[in-house]
Image (cartoon, rainbow, N blue to C red; front, top):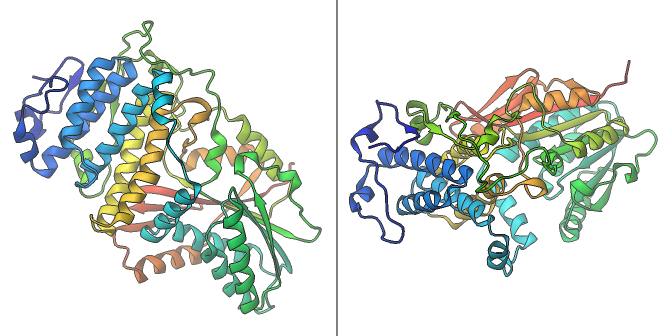
Amino acid sequence: MVPEGQSFVTSSPLQFIPWMSFSPGLGSPFPWLRELKSEERGLYLIHLLVSCANHVAAGSLENANIGLEQISHLASTDGDTMQRIAAYFNEALAYRMLKAWPGLYKALNSTKISLVSEEIHVQKLFFELCPFVKLAYVITNQAIVEAMEGEKMVHIIDFNCFEPAQWINLFQTFNARPEGPPHLRITGLHEQKEVLDHMARRLTEEAQKWDIPFQFNPVVCKLENLDLESLRIKTGEALAVSSVLQLHSLLVTDDEMHKWKVNSPSMSKTDRSHTVLPMSQRTLGEWLKKEPVHAYSPSSDLASPSPLSPLSLAPAPKMGSFLTALRALSPKLIVITEQESNNSGSTVMERVMEALNFYAALFDCLESTVSRAPLERKKVEKMLFGEEIKNIIACEGVERKERHEKLEKWILRLELAGFGRVPLSYHGMLQAGRLLQTNNYDGYKIKEENGCLVICWQERPLYSISAWRFRPYD
């Protein structure tokens, strides 16, 4: 029997599976659950996750706790795509519940050690295992080369300067210019001095090898704390900016207009349906496509204006002031790579549903690209994807750093800030396609969208790349 507030599509094979109500602490009284076929188990986990998220959003902690236990019986970080993603969403929902008791949460997390070196390591693993960042580098470099044609002095600001491969490739391309390479200056931004020191050594060596007049300017700083006015832009320099998966960090706000409510007795029972959007991809995406999930959410904050609407922009004062300061530098080119997902919703259910679709595709492509056993893949899933999922679902206010927005919203933000779009060339798209083909990255696609490019897993867009320039006011 389906519990009150939930509906299942009649075509689902789950209609033949009784909806169990597990008792906390007793373990699973249905051992046959572990014998479910992968697809049936995946569908069941989707419904369990949505149901549990609704209970968490409503502040129904006892029911949420039962849901977490049910999911734990089927989820596994060593399992198939849905089992793995369920494990990390389960952890994120548990963290959100735990935050209802700040003292307990702080006590349990007070001895945890967060090493920046591990974060850098996992970013490099993501770069190596998946083609997304490689593609962003190739497309960014091609846009820079085209924009800087004929320029004798080029200054590049890299908002996340940790991987030498991007700029070594650019050195080679600049060296082949008929007019010879420009004088190149790179300002690299990173919060770790050791990373920038390594970048300086590697790039200086490579610049000498390719006979590039070169200067490296390190800035030890997080993007959110960067004072753009302090960057020294010399007269005669053509400025380019590279931002790969960084700019969304400036969308952070204190959310005073949408305060987080956990277990609030004033919550009304407002009906609102949420549907997992279909994705045309194999495994988990196919399940979502043929099994739309309808979930009842009792949280009244779902009636508030949602930034998921294509034409609405969530307030982001820090982003606005940053773009104004960036425009004042008169950049000839800005290339922005961002996650193609609307994870900036004001309510937890909005974010759960959107994140489930986005990370389902990421876990799917890892399942296809890398075998299940390697420790490297587990590190990427836990330390990168898992931490992002946890931040999206469990955190609020200034703690919620992962506020991704889709391309249509970035276009609106950049145009409102006074930037003009620069169409990415077909040559850049060809180079990206060649990279995929050469490295046998099956299932990945590059698509053009309004002069921008989106990187897809199967048909599901996962990352967007757009180029911009300084546009004088009329």
